[in-house]
Amino acid sequence: MSVTIEVPRTPQFARRRRRFNIEKWGWIYMRASGVVLVVLIFGHLFVNLVAGQGVRAIDFAFVGGKLSQPFWQVWDTLLLWLALIHGSNGMRTIVNDYANNVLLRRILKGALLASTVVLLVLGTLVIYTFDPCPAGAPADLLASFCPVK
Image (tube, rainbow, N blue to C red; front, side, top):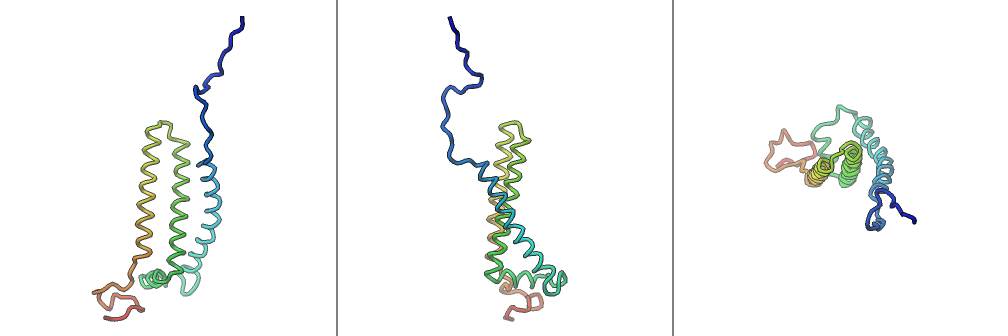
């Protein structure tokens, strides 16, 4: 008489293998975004700190002038999105590694997702709706490139 012993922890129903592996794509994103972020960050630092008059030139007019140009709007948007998602993905990995409680892990990941979405939306709105020449502002507070009204 022979007895068959099942392998421990064998699922009752065989699970279908997922075709989309979020961990693999998260890993690939971290590498690709890291390379692009190095270029974006050093370009940002060069323009803001080295070119022109250096750090002394950074004031409201400098930022307003940069954000009024479409090139810099796209540059800053890429920098914002890539850096924030890169950092959030890193935090997600840390939560997966150290949060042992399933409920706590779910809460932390939800809070991370919510804060990421809010910051992406608000940051993008600021970049594209920033008005360096607000109507009704005193002329002495306006940037040099603003028309006096």
